[in-house]
Each structure stands twice: as structure tokens, then as C-alpha cells.
Length: 329
Image 1: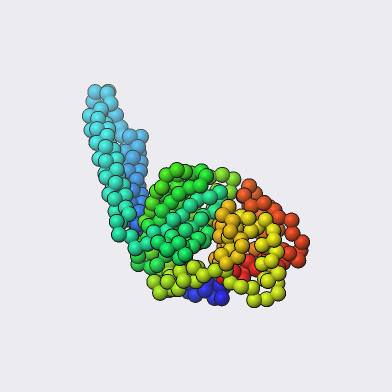
Image 2: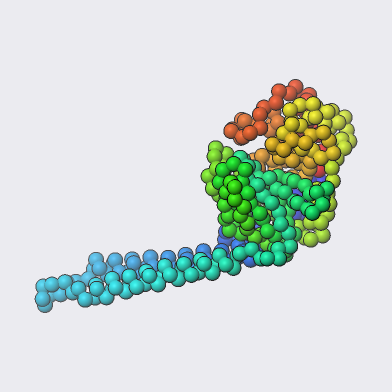
């Protein structure tokens, strides 16, 4: 089912024109479009300035000195330098105004349809969908679902060091600073999968701190929300049943939550529906039974320095726990 869902999203994205590239020049929402326009404008201005400078340089190298007075003709040079200074002031002022205008255009609307809290960890993203009714609140990790065509306010916080939230196709960068709450606006005009990452060096595994923003049609988004609010599924075969028992008897349950079980740890990601996520370890591996087993067996080899310890397991326990994790959809 997960593979079919990913394939379906990919087909929708291709038809809609969403390439999935992590590029500020592949915008699919108003904030990203405003930023793209600013980038193009600044690039054009810089190209024109470079051409003018090269032209003046060539002219200066090739110009002949006056043979009448034996002195350089300083008047044209004075005019050029004065013009260059005036143009520099005008260009800098213009770029500053354009940047300010773009910042105001991508500001947060007061009536955002949805607010999602994202908390930066070393090195993964904790995603919190809060509701006025605590029973309807839930958490996920490294994968953010948003409805297409709606303004979504992403409330950003950090648990440890400075991170930077960046989904180039949907918005600009915004820092996550410990002790401070920042926000960024996301709006996707087309369904698809948009890759993002941490854009501020935050430690050893900074480059392995990716996220996926999945833009769903409103009806699909509501179905996803309803599914995520459910408790973890009950095992349906012997391997996953044995895996659940092993998981709950090991230190795993002290760090992770699986709703509907005695596992209520808050140190690591919520695993209630880990099997439905596209990747694990913040984009490092595709979510398959094999990658789950590899991660559980030795997380420090795959992502050195992360906070997950290596839990001693027998080969049978590892097989069963990976089956249980894969079944949590």
C-alpha cells in the first residue's frame, strides 16, 4: 500500500508539474514564487553590472592618451567613476527595497487555515498536530502533510541548537532558535512531495536532516489526519506480534511512543505510524523492513552521533521488531 501511495503521489506530481526537486527555482506556492522573482531580479541586475564593469575595463585598457597635452584625459574617467558610484547607491537601495517588499509579501497571514508545530532535534524533525481536544492531537516525524491550496503556519522551535527550516519549492528559510518561537508560511498550489532540509549547520549529521512535505488534496488530507489519530495497528501475524512483545520489553519503549501500547517514551520520534512514512532517520533511508532492521541493529554506523543507542538484540528479535515497525501504518 505504501509503495502504491508513493507511486500515485509521484504520478500526480508529474502530471501537475511538480518535479519534486529541492530548488528555489522550482516554486509551487506563492511564498516560493515571490522569492524566485527576487532571485531572478537580483541575478539580472548583477549580470548587467558585470557586463558594464567588463565594458569599462576593456575601454580603460584600450583607450589612448591625449597626444595634444601629453596628459591623460581625466574628465571622462571622472564622469564614469561618479556615474558608477551613483549607480551603486541606486542598485543597493533598489535591492534593499525589493528584498523588504518580498519579505512583506511572504509574511504570515493572520487567518492561516492550519498551524503545525515543528521542533528541530539533533538530527530529526518532530512534527506536532495539536488540537483543542488533546485526544485528537498526534505527532509524527520528518514528514509534514498539508492540504493543497491552504495557508499553513509552521511554528518553529528548537530543542537543542540553531536549525533552519527550508523547503525551497514552498518557502524561504527560517531559523529555529532555542528559547524562541519563529514561524514560516507554507502554501502548495499543487499536490506532490516537496523535499526540504536543515539549512543551518547543527552538528555532525546536519546533512542528514531532511524532511518531506506532502501536499494532499483536502479530502485526502482529512483521510490522512483521521488515520494518524488512530492508535497503532494490532499485529496481524506471528512475526509482528512477537516484535511488539520484544519492542515493549526492551529499552525501545522508554524512548518511543506507540499509541495504544505501554510505550510512552518522548525522547525519540513517535513510532505509532512509522510504517506509513516514506523515510526513516530524517530522510536517510527508505522505509522498508530491511532498512528498519539495519537502523535498529546499528544506528551509530548509519548515522554516527545520533542519540539512539544500539540495543542488544538477537537475530530473531531484530527480525520480529522490524516486522512490527513495518506493520505500523
